[in-house]
Amino acid sequence: MAAENFNTFSETDPNSLITRTSSRVSWEDLTRNEDAFVFLDKGVAFFAGSFVHRLTFSITAGDASSSLFSALWLVANAADSYDTVRAGDALALLFFFSGATPNIRLVESDGGSQAESAQFNITLGVTYHLTITRDEDTGANGTLTCAIYSDAARTNLLDTLTRTLGVKNDFRYVYPLSSFNATNANKHTGFTQDLDITNSTGTPQVSTQLPTAITATTATGNGTIADLGISAVTAHGWVWDTSAIDTAVVPGSQPNSTDEGAGALGPFTTAITGLTGGLIYFGRAYATNTQGTTYGEGVQWKAGASYSTKEWGDTSMKGNELHTVGEDGVERAHMGTPV
Image 1 (spheres, rainbow, N blue to C red):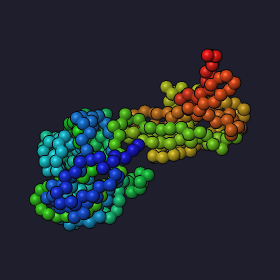
Image 2 (cartoon, helix red, strand yellow; image 1 turned 60 degrees about the vertical axis):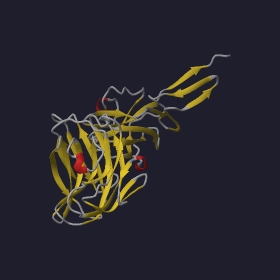
Image 3 (cartoon, rainbow, N blue to C red; image 1 turned 45 degrees about the vertical axis):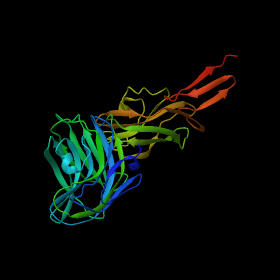
Image 4 (spheres, one colour; image 1 turned 180 degrees about the vertical axis):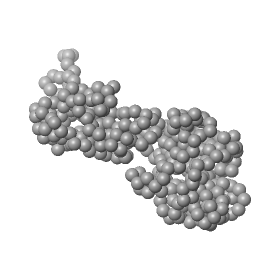
């Protein structure tokens, strides 16, 4: 995954209240009635189908009043402040004060008609890490969820906001900030950062790293979950055998597999056991969510020989033969012809 570069976004900010770096959009004393917003034109219907957006935000100060202040995340089909955008089709994460209580909530706009999720009360000055998911395979028109975490690794879940969508719409623009631009001049200060966009195919993204701690009977399998996909990872681990792994077979039906249960973004390890010294083994990392299983690239190694590991892309010369390791972890020889 790669975060969006906010320096490539467009900005309307007549009173210079917004500051941008490549990874952060921050604002100071932005008023509710300000016409200020930051957006990127991704192209017509770029946000079609399911997607996952990740971002981080904090509201550090604000005037307590019962008001909608701004959109902290927004996809829409118009480039303007939120009060104008919501008259059309849009999906948004909005920041409110309900009396003295700051909170966020999801809002769906369909031709000017708004429908909200429940609210999550936030604490000023605290940083929150969000995963916003539109899953078009759930329900008649899909669901929009916002998982709220206290940590950047997204392992400590605080709450999940859910909006069952009333219609399927495609969207063109994405915003990390848009003021409301209506009525009073109540102020707030904060930032959004590290916006990562995935138009997801649904399943997780996982890669395989070479096994370590190799003995005659055991090894440590290594993998990395790069993207959870459209829903939480419910199983992850390794599969291995003395022949190349058939990726059409689910992990539990493979000759050998581990299952470390629910998974988070980042590297993981798993214990490989029951090996026979001297045999060549092939292995892959995997991750599973509600949409299916994804396998990482194949690797190979010899039980009992820590020097024997091979992975996709490895090349070597053996006599007059060029040997390469394929995506399945299998080494193949390419015969040379004298010229």
